[in-house]
Length: 120
Image (cartoon, rainbow, N blue to C red; front, side):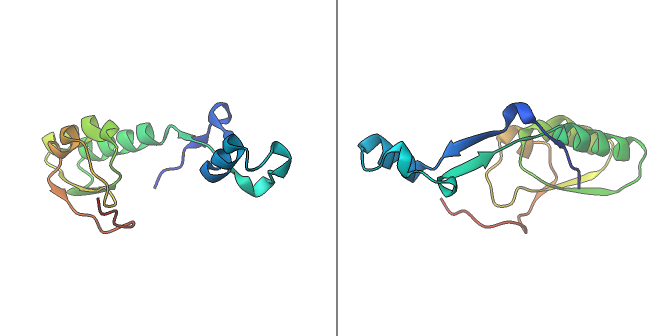
């Protein structure tokens, strides 16, 4: 597990979709809004890079035989590709989310055990 840093530059509040529609349709006014009508949005920065470096380091040092990555981000393609070239069995759990073909091409197995299934 890797923790990133919260980026203040990308932190913001957004009005809920329901309240936005009510406001635009004239059903409510700005004075009718309260704190619960807003959501905070923030992003962690640097996590993908840290995980990629961990994967690379473990692969080059031959510290593991298998890596199970719980993610679905195609940013991990280079790390997965390198790990497999070093003989590491690379398993991906995208938590029931779809992954890009470029990532699928560089894994040994796909198995969702975590998260909630999203049926299309």
